[in-house]
Length: 208
Image 1 (tube, helix red, strand yellow):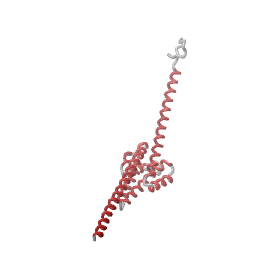
Image 2 (image 1 turned 120 degrees about the vertical axis):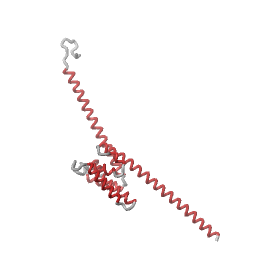
Image 3 (image 1 turned 45 degrees about the horizontal axis):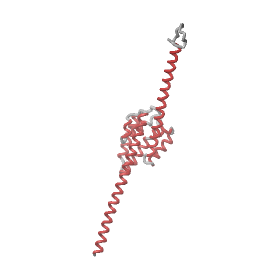
Image 4 (image 1 turned 180 degrees about the horizontal axis):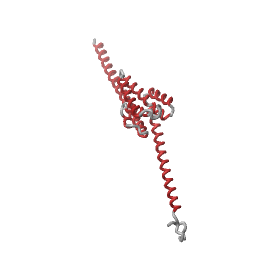
């Protein structure tokens, strides 16, 4: 009888240890998932904001707001997927944001909601992907790959696209400054050459 009681007691302690061990492992996994999601949100939001700011999209700060990414991504359809100025980019972005919100609310579980959000966001980013690779077919493939990689592709493409836009923007500014400097130098030389010299000045190279 005593042995049976001790056996049951040991099993009870083993169950408690297993329960707390499983709970600790579950909390650790949730913590890792939370940190990964936070990093994805910050990195994607930052690079998307840079692209939207350089491209002068409407409300670029929405890059950090859920469903705001749909609004910005939709604006990139103008001129990349759809004919340039065939629709107002703001209306395209608004349509994506509303459709994304409606479809998101139709999710049946937490897993469905996450997958639905990632899928719609990837579709909204097709315009941005196409703007970078210049090929709509490749843009669609990148969107599919973004779903498979849980959004990692979007971070990489937005990072590369933001750097490309920044280099192009800086190059344009430098080119313009060089042109202005060259034009100012040419005008100065023209003014110096057109200024008359005094006929009685022994130093003909010195202008008065």
